[in-house]
Image (tube, rainbow, N blue to C red):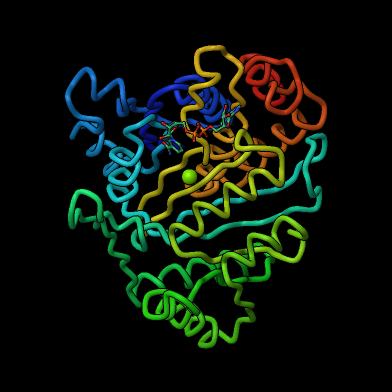
Length: 324
Ligand code: NAI
Ligand code: MG
C-alpha cells in the first residue's frame, strides 16, 4: 500500500479529529500522507481559503481526507469536491450498540447528488431586497447518481428510496425523479419514491423502513443531518465524496466552534470516514478492522461528552489505536 492521501485538517475541531484518523490509517496501512492548508485561518494568512497548491494536491492524490472549514466552508469544500471529480456524496447513518440513539435499529445510507441542484452557486441580486437562486438539474447527473446509488444498494443489501419534491419543482425534480427511475427500470431494480418533506417525518418516526435514500443535493444535506440526530449526533457521521478516479472523505460535521480547542471533539465520524477511505482504495480488510475497533470503543467506552461520556479526543484515539 503506497497510496497517496492528501490531508487537509482545516479549522476548529478539524485540526483535532483529522490527526486521529491519520494515526488510525497509519496503524492499518502503509500510506503516504501529504498535508495542505485550507479554511478561515488560511484565508486570514494567505488571502485565499483554498490555495491553488491545496486544490492541486487533492486533484492529484489517490484520496483526500478533509476535516472542516468554518465560515469559508462553501469556498473550500465545494471546489475540493469538484477537484476530486466527485459526483456522489455517500453518508451512512447507523445506530451503534452503546450509543443512545432515538431509534437503535437505524441503518440508513444517503446517496446525495453532489454537483448541482440549489448548490450550483447561481444566485442573483435583483434589487437590494429581492434575490433569486437558480436550481440546476440535468438528466446526466440524475442518471449518474442513480447508477451509483443502485450499485451501492445492491452491493450492500439495501432497499432504495428516491427522495424528491417533483410535485412542486416539476421541471427540475421531475427530471431528477424520471432520470433515477429510468435507471432503476432499466436494471429491473425495485424502489420507492418519497416526497422529501414527508420522508423527513417518516425518518423520525420509523427509520427502519428505509435503507439507501437517493437524494438531490440540498435534500441529502438536510436529511443526513436529521439522520445524525436519530443515531446520536454529528460526531458519528462519516462521508465519502466519490468520483470516477478519486474521492474525498470527511466527517459530516463542521468546525464545532462551541467545543473547538477543548480537546473533547468526537473523532469517530472522521475515523469512520478513514475506514471508508480504506475500502475505496481497495483495502476492505483494513476498513473492516477500523470499523470493528470503533464499534468496540463505542460499546465499551471511552466516550466523548457528545455521547454522554467524559473522555477526551486523545482517550478515544488511544483506545481505538490500541485495538488495532
Ligand atoms: P457543526 O457540525 O460544527 O456543529 C453542530 C453541533 O454539533 C455543535 O454543537 C457541535 O459542538 C456538535 N458537534 C459537531 N461535530 C462534533 C464532534 N465531532 N464531536 C462533538 N460534537 C460535535 O455545525 P455548525 O455549528 O452549524 O457550524 C459550525 C461551523 O462549521 C460553521 O462555520 C459552518 O460553516 C462550518 N461547517 C463546515 C462544514 C464543512 O467544512 N464541511 C460542514 C458544516 C458546517
Ligand atoms: Mg451539512
